[in-house]
Length: 240
Image (tube, rainbow, N blue to C red):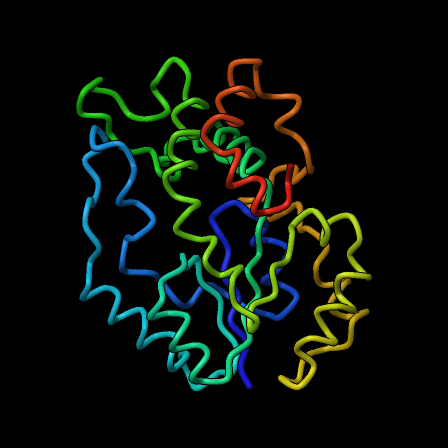
């Protein structure tokens, strides 16, 4: 039996990976979760089928013969098939998409001289995403386009959907659930897992990780826009 962990960027990677001593080692090459982003950002509008094959092969055989791996890998039927055929259990680490948006926005302001994550160029408005007057609205649009390509992981019985908020607020209880579910893989005991899940404030990508932070950051417009564009996604994920 093997373990694969996947999470949408900014969904709590700093929590889940240290529990198992992981580093990102599977990279999605399909770009499937970008194909519905507004065309004005000039991103891939078609699936990269060569990339699908490359990623599928990476999921069939983890690097260095390890029995565990991590990646920001959206859902694709070929990926699920490869993992099921190799007796792999998957943890799909999720977070309230509205808080993910806040994390993206706040981290963009800390980027300094570095290009912020996903700061794509809007060819119609001739500015980068974070140069928009209202980048949060742009991020809501991005989230509505991307999240549907991730949620297929929730429909398989070999996948555990793990909420970032549950692990952050009830660390030991969730660690016990994880341990019971994947103990055959040969993982540390629940107490050790819980201790390793504590956020490391020294991590340059860690900011606050506060559940429900969007309530402090979103304007009325953002709340309404999020419910309009993300309502069905939030419902499926259990956030409304």
